[in-house]
Amino acid sequence: MEASERARLDTYFGKIARQFVPPEFPSALLVTHLLPERPAFVRAVGTVTNLRAVLPKPKSVDPAARREIEQTVPCDELTRELFANPDTAVTYLETRAAGEDVVLLDVGGYFAPVLQTMCDRFSGRVLGVVEDTENGHKRYADRDKLPCPVVSVARSPLKDPEDFLVGQSVVFSTEALLRGRGDILHGRPALVIGFGKLGSSIARLLHAKGVHVTVYDIDPVRRAQALSQGFGVARDREQAIARAGLVLCATGALSLRGEDFPNLRNGSYVATVTSSEDELELEGLPDGYTRNSSGENVTRYSTTGHYFYLLNNGNAVNFLHGASVGPFIFLVQAEILAGVRMLARRDLNATIHEVPAEDRATIAATWLNYYNR
Image 1 (tube, rainbow, N blue to C red):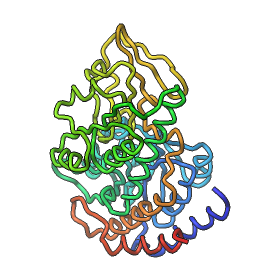
Image 2: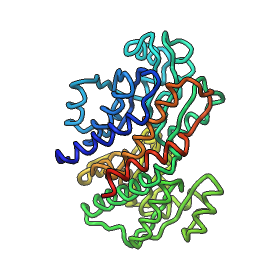
Image 3: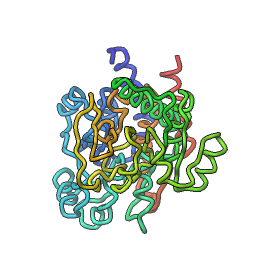
Image 4: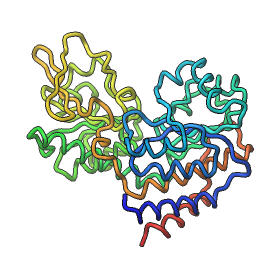
């Protein structure tokens, strides 16, 4: 990023931070993709909270960004296991913010499994969670009862540009890997599993590239939407998997079980938009499969009479090429700062909340002032 761009970004976040100053500064733990532009956002979080630690998503860490952040804030290792065990989760929280009021800034519902225990046993107070993704939103929404407020920006209209551009980056990276092996997308039948905002974006972009796209989603409403937009909709999931030359997993949850992999068409490619631990049950792959490199970031899984290719080891394929969505990501990051202020006011009940429309309008107007020049 050029010096002038860095200066503009810092100025933008400075304006946003002044617009959403909380009444009292809580402490914070921040889960984030640590991409090259991310230090500016981390600094902004540090201006509206006492930022105690950054937990980078493990498959999306830019070394230079991490070194820059570590000069002022600890970067701790993030795993699902850390927040799967109540004892380890509470111990970690005590290590970083004992006795303090804390907001948890999440990407993917990492805190969801132990949120009740953290609220019950932590020596301070968990004021709530701000969640960035649809996957994480579902993890919190699926709980029988929330012990604290959750502010979700996953379904915000300010996230629509990001979702479209993420879909674009997924298709770009998928095509780049196929071309690296001498294959192309055109003429290859594709199955998109999941027709949410990301899946629908991917389906439209693949169609524009001459790909015959079939959609599968467990939600009948989304299947009807896909059909209305001109896509084939699979009536039988297993048959659709067997026919596809490319399977793109965009559910944010489990898309392919272990028993699905032997049904894949020979020579088919599998790619995901989130991490392999969310989308793919690779540990359930039947015995007898071997894995070998088949080009840069392409793994060939094979057994007698069957083989398929996995892109980027099953992790989000777009992160191979930076996963950039340009300045539109700064809209969502600003909304996260607005969510911090909502939690710091301490007047929300223990349900899922959205940022008010007037705050979104303020964010959009500020963003346009800096990035619509």
